[in-house]
Length: 307
Image 1 (cartoon, helix red, strand yellow):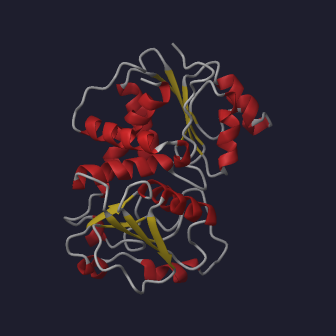
Image 2 (cartoon, helix red, strand yellow):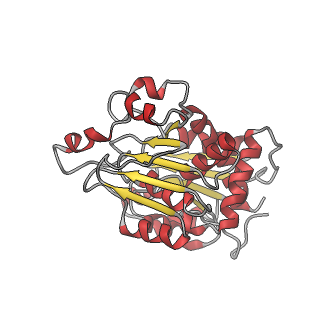
Image 3 (cartoon, helix red, strand yellow):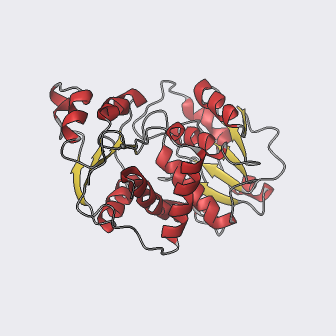
């Protein structure tokens, strides 16, 4: 049976999830990673995957998860829908909701675009990345942390790089867990938005941010970075690489934290945001993190349809 008019579970932002939802999704992702049986809740259903931007991990993760759950799959590229000829996203959502059971979408646009697609409240809409937030990345990150450390509570993460959609999602996610700390070091002019900082504080989490590499935290469990050029975005400052250069994660920074693991949401540009010896080194769990996108996607799809 399709989700009813009052059952559609949209995941546009992590703020759409209760603390209980967030914990359950992480635990379910961990269980799937450990080989737990998946539900048959998507058998006979159809999942649409609409990506207007390039993707390797997220698109493959949701596609593979949907197929493993028994769902049919329809993929749309940036030139496939009539939004290109002027149809509104609101109308597009109303039509797709009568044919699809779930829509997974990636754009480089504002959250209002996904909200328009979700206005029909019949077909769950899952944000697989927008300009402001990457919620499913954060779920994969939390799953990775839970699997590696056994618990998220009390973990200390040093994030180095742009305060982009991945950083925003990480802040909104970690802030829900008691004792967890997120220390961001972002280039001047490229930090978190006021909205994300305010919301993280309202959740009660410890989220700090500086725009230099001074006064680093004494101990951390994880050093995390992302690609400097976020998918689908450009930087107006032609000299932005000079501003970002001090925020490189090299062996010297990792040596400061000899017990810390390294995370990266990928794709990576070795020699820019991270040194090859760090990304490919024994303390890197970036490729475990990538695999966990599929396990998290499984959990999200099950949750979206109430399976």
